[in-house]
Length: 135
Image (cartoon, rainbow, N blue to C red; front, side):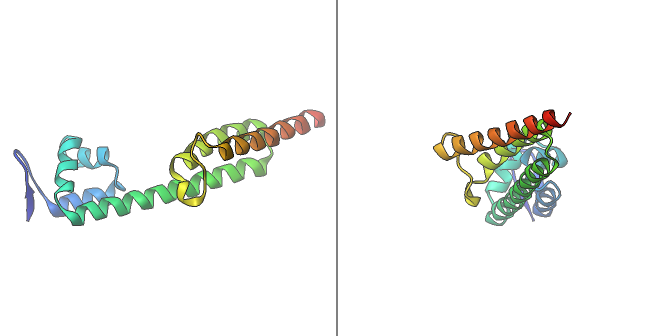
């Protein structure tokens, strides 16, 4: 049985598949269903099972994103390449600060975040100096 809208009747099974196939990304869900993002949001919000499914897929996606950010940062540190480290630091810190509160990462305006940035800046600077001294 579908959820009735004013112009569309999107079957619940189609909504469930779209949520799963698009990892909870509403813009992609709407695109795959051929409707506007607000239409997809409205359909999903009317059904508690769909709301939970969307929430679960978003949490799973966020966990994967956090794992990737941590891995990227670790690889950059392991390579001891200052340019790679600086780029990885920027991208990883953005992800970790945005999505990683549950893992203990601090929000962008906290003092701890400033300390982490200073420490990472020092690590990158030292790696750059080491690299330059080897050349």
